[in-house]
Amino acid sequence: MNNVRAPHPRVRDIVPYDPKYLPARAMLSANENPDDVPAPVRDAIARAIGEVALNRYPDPLANDLRYALAEAYGLQRGNVLVGNGGDELLLDVLMCWGGPGRTLLNVPPTFSVYAADARLTGTQVVDVARTDDFAIDEEAVLAAVAEHDVDIVVVCSPNNPTGDVARREFVEQLLDATDALVLMDEAYGEFSGQTTLDLLERHRNLVVLHTFSKAYSLAGVRLGFVLAHEQVITELVKVRQPYSVDAVSQAIGLQVTRQRQAFDERIACIVQERERMLEKLRGLPGVEVWPSQANYLFFRVKGHAQGLWQHCYDNGVLIRDFSTGAQTQDCFRVTVATRDQNDQFLACLGTYLQEGEGR
Ligand SMILES: *Cc1c(COP(=O)(O)O)cnc(C)c1O
Image 1 (cartoon, rainbow, N blue to C red):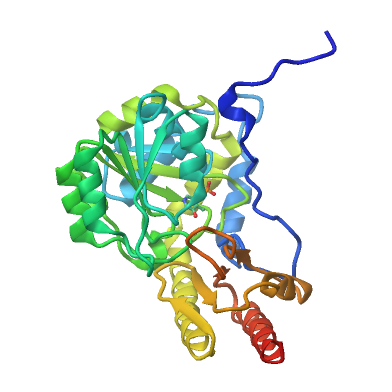
Image 2 (cartoon, rainbow, N blue to C red):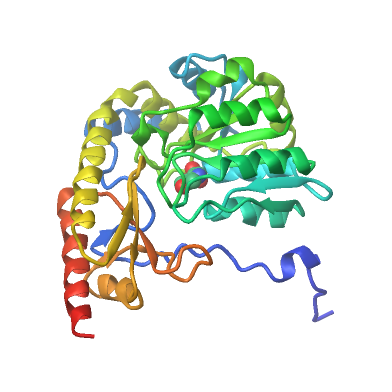
């Protein structure tokens, strides 16, 4: 047979995830850390990798790393599950609590992976749109969990791409209002200094997602983890790929977790740069910018956003374009990086706006 039948209808119209991975002088599109891991940590990683048995399968659950993470967050090993990036764990959650006949409550505009995973797993999605200012419509979310038979609620906090943190009182209310799994995606939590993790003690339905990709400079390694009640972890273990976290990644994660204080100063620098950029953007006529608790800023260029992405790219600066999104017309996201790279971006935006005056 020189032919192949169509895949499952669920898959047919899916467009593969495209992060527009293009080389540029200033890579400000993926919220990565601008700096690689600090040299002393890098040395420790090199030594640790040198001792990894490459011929052996890794510990499927990465127990050494789970233990180190549990210690770091004041939990037990049974409260931690490590994955091949946070992205893998998001799919695990959808496979476990989602699926045909099940419902995810989503709060767009937010991280696109949630809706993509829902689609992939045949999970129905109930969208509760954010307000015009991208705040969570708290009453509408609470009404939706009361009205629909919701199995998962996902709240990205700080929200990607808009940068705001969910109000703690709201999260508590939500956890009390439903027995749905409430997934708090705190991939950028290190930049906000806020977490809902302490609510785990009284809420069995809370799952907190973290990643090594952002604050911990390991986007190239693929490591993420969830923190949850042991009962939840036990379920997730059933659906995960047994060897998704390879031995080299486990060794790297362990070193970085042990030396995580080495990242504090850089995180503080990025936060400082974020506030500097926020002020600069606020001072630009025609630009609306939202305060952010993450390592990126979300902004709107009123009226003439078309061409900004290309203008930046032509000048060596890669940003993320949201300008054609349903709720995000004329909006863009820029990662806060080194001072020099941030200045390159600000210069690009400045010249674009100036040229725009003549348009
Ligand atoms: C980056 C990111 C993740 C996880 O990324 P991984 O690289 O797969 O660990 C999860 N959620 C959000 C909102 C993110 O931006």
